[in-house]
Every structure is written in structure tokens, then in C-alpha cells.
Image 1 (cartoon, rainbow, N blue to C red):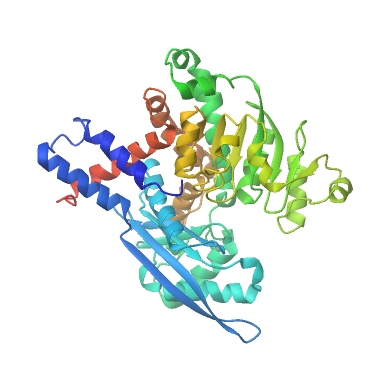
Image 2 (cartoon, rainbow, N blue to C red):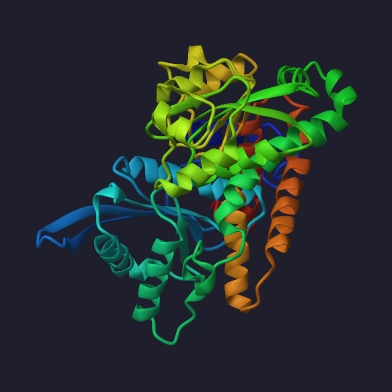
Length: 458
């Protein structure tokens, strides 16, 4: 969602009526406390802005706008990615920082929510220039970053290379101090965790698989008795061959697509994938491993011509990128950027299940419209937490300087996500709220309880 303040307020309104929640708060005191909660959770603690002064290789000096938003640290140090993208703006970064607060609370992680952004297209800069931009970011925001203050990670346009550079600069500025936990998503040799790169994509698909194969199938009889619109949408897909379209074929989308392609428990057929340039379609199913190999050899891009497809023996038809969202499939997996489904295309969406791998890919208006139609939306706050969960494991490993094996990382990741879903899904299918709001209610409940016990509502 582009804005989640409304859902936070709606969640608090629902909790206000539940007298079993914070029972010590009565009458006027209760109303005052809930007004405090709305104010606290809907606004960030800090918005840090700066213009990074960078000398380009051609001798030009540029000033690049950058942000670090620290939303809430009630549960622990701020945690959230840094994105390099030309569409970055203060509102977007603030919204994503707020989402991180809620996500960490939902998954019982000891972090608050933060987010960073730099307004550039990284493809327009040399490696040397990007290295300098990373160093400048750490220099300019040095006072607010640190293993127990604010711990950035990769996001759109950044990866382990950028996190390595940033951690190295933090280490230079703080000689003799602990530094491994200052950034997560680093390379393995620099203290990164095995499995971190694939964690988000694996977690996104695991969430969908666990919902459909484990929970819905195992509780089919109970769900059929609920007269629940979203249960009906899920039950229609049980034991059926599921057509799937994946928007975005970067690290997240490609990994999630590969997990779907090789899954034996569900009958997935990925008929369409897209990236920033093109959509590829095959009604019989795409060869995802072949597409991944091609993308790895072509700077992340999918084949864009019939000739390229033929040369690589990939059977697909080249189509317009933006048409992917509106094709007739059972499941739409969104792994691109924000606000992809909005008021202008929401009525054309045909998928009955949407999985949000990206952050906030559906606007608030479109989310409400689709939910009213009975479309089951697995929200970002639930589905794409794999990255921050493994970032947490990386943070722990950096502090202990003892490291898990890759299979141990995935086991811990899946156990954490399963634990969250085992808490949320019975509650969701037992009440009228969409899954997104159900997750928000759970997060807000956790944050509100801690804020009350810390005496921060007075």
C-alpha cells in the first residue's frame, strides 16, 4: 500500500472495542491512550535528509538527495534497507520505514523500523562513483547508524557489494569498535550470512505454499464451514493446476519463480514473467531455470527478442511488459516496485490470489477494491519478511562470530515464517478482516502493549 496509516488507525479502532486488550485502560484514559498510539505509530521518530556531495569521474561535482527515516525503535534498533532508485522520495521512504516497524513486530524480531534511499539510477554511475556514493552515505549519516542504533540492509538497486562498501566505511570511522552488525546483507567473506541473497524470494514462495498446501488443505473441512469470502477463494484452488504470473525478475522474483517451478507439493505453471523491459508468455509454462541462466549472463535482463529466445532454446512469446498484471491467471506474484496495481488498472485484475513479494505494490484504493471482490491478497508484511529474518540471523552471527550452515539458515527462516502464519491464519479465517489488516492488528497489538508497559502513552 502507498499509505498504511489508515489501516493502522482502523486496527487501533478494532482493538479499542476489545476490552480484553490492555484491560488496565478504562474510559477516558483508554481513549487518550489510543489517540496517543495513533500519533506514535503513524509518524516517524526521525527523518534525516542530506545532499551527498560526490565528485564524478569526469570532474563534475553533483549533490545527490538521500534519506534515512527512523520510524520506531520500541522493539529494538531501527532496521531496514537502503534503496538506490530515481523514484525515491521522502514519502515513499517514510511509508516503507513504517512498514518495517509493523513487519518486525509481526514476526517477533527485536528490531524497530527504518528505511533509506538515494535518488539515483545506479546504472548511470560507474563502479568507482557508486563506491563513493556509498561512502558518502555512511559519512553523512554516521551519527545515527550502528549495530545497536540503526542497521541498514540492501533494497532495490543495492546488494552485498554496496553493503560491504558501507560496512568498510563505518569500520574506518569507528576504529576498534564492533562493526560487523552495522550492516546486513553483506558478502559471506565480510561476515554476511549464507542464504541471505535468496531469503526474501524463498520466503515469499514458502508463505504461499504453506498457506495453500499446508494450512488450507489441512483445514479444508473447517474452512468450508466458515462462510468466509477469502476461504472460498483459497478453497477453489486446492489440488488444482495453478497458473502463475511473476512481475519482476530480479533477485526476489527469479528466486520465487524458481521455487515455484521446482515445487512438488503444488501444481504451479508459471505462464508469464516480466522485468523492466519485457514480458515473456507461454501458456504451457516457461522454462524458469533457462531464463535465470540467461538473466545472469545479461546483467539481469530477460530476453527481449524472438531471436534471443530462439538462440537460447526458450519457448515464449514477447509481449508488452505492463500487460502482465492483467492476464488471466490464478496467482499473481508481485516482485517489482510500489504502486503497480492502482485505480487505473485495478478493475482489470483477474487473479484470485495475489502474493506481495515487493513492498507496497498495491495502492490503498486498489487493495480495498480487490479485497471487496474477494481477492485473497497475501500482504508484503507477511510474505516478504525472509530478508529481514535472515538479516536478524546475520546480525546475531556477527555478534557471536559463529556462523550457521546454509541449510540451518533456511530451516530457521521457514520455522519463523511458519510460526507467524500459525498465529495469524486461524485468526484471519475466523474474522471478516482482509489478511493485511489482520496482520496489522497483530503488529499494532504487540507494539501497543510494549509502549504501554514502557509508560510511553502518557
